[in-house]
Image (tube, rainbow, N blue to C red; front, top):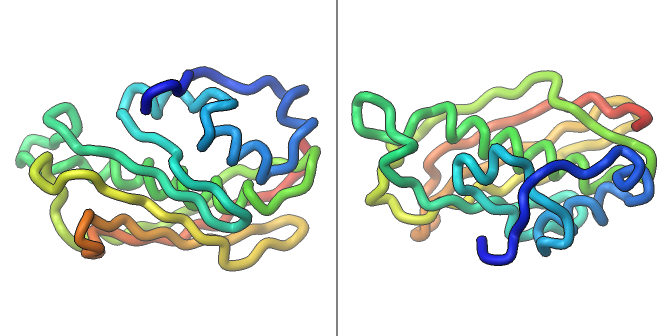
Amino acid sequence: MTGKTYGTVSTEQRQQMSGLEFVQGLASGALPLNTIAQTLGYDVVEAESGRVVITLVPNATHLNPAGTVHGGLTAILLDSCMGLAVQSTLEKGTAQTTLEFKISLIRPITPETGEIRAEGRILNCGRRIGTADGRVTDAQGRLLAHGTTTCLIFPA
């Protein structure tokens, strides 16, 4: 995550960009990532219209009492990549927020898993509702978790 900054993007600046420009700015480092990305150590690494990839290397700070990565971390990665996939399809002056999401945890994640990849892809985007799905995989491409989201689309 070298060269990335953290913070927020002003409403005025966001309104001047399409959703794709915004998400690509996060991936390139031209725009700051949110501070939860800094806290948890994840990075937005790829962004194209309808598709966003986030990566993270799990470590001991992510563990639950059983010694595996807390499911909440996986939920954050999926919520982020799926929501940003929806965002990447929006026009200037339009925003989105998660209405609901569902995830399924398939395999345990530990620090020994190595880098994990959360990929969100748009399923459908209308004027008021956008849907996307997401997959979390390891370096060997094994499915660790998956999910779906429904996002509300509104004027920014």
